[in-house]
Length: 233
Image 1: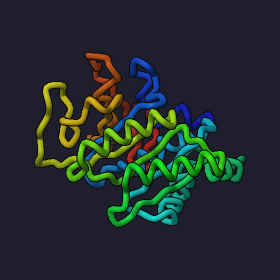
Image 2: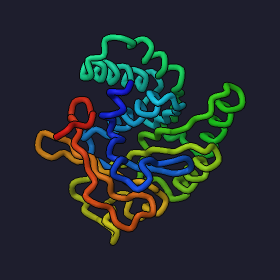
Image 3: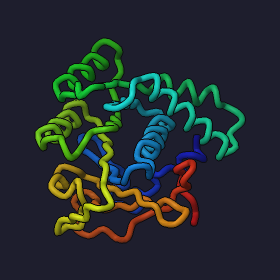
């Protein structure tokens, strides 16, 4: 879907040094509750899927049926916004064929369990993911070893991993590199760090860390608050 790729939230990476996250690397999207972390991550997933890449969506809060329903609703909104009338069934089949959903509810998420599940997908289903979406990991309660483990998994399976992190209005901690809570003590593990912020009636997605680039310009794009597609405004 060429129209979508040109309006994807990942358009922000046109402003980055490498134009992508890349295999073996981690990225995190920081936002307050209700701003749209999950919606934005699903748009990242669509970007990968419409490029015919394989994706695993890892959910720590919702079951597979709920996640599938969310994808369906967001795809319908996307097709309506882009006035896509032809090929909708083809696009839906592309999503279904190239996406797997793994749910770890009730604090059952463990790195070794994820590694075993991914190995099973590769060896038994011939499904080797290019990217993982990990939604719902509590950065406040998760030990650094888990993020180290995710970094190792990304390297082992030659995949990129996208996470979301919940920030709070009343916690204003920022490290010397400008990375805010709750990632200010983990930023060395992430190749890309992005922040989603409401500004008036718009949503702005900003790049806070760009791989090893010591300076990050005011790299941001405006997203439509309903579709989370990039706008020209």
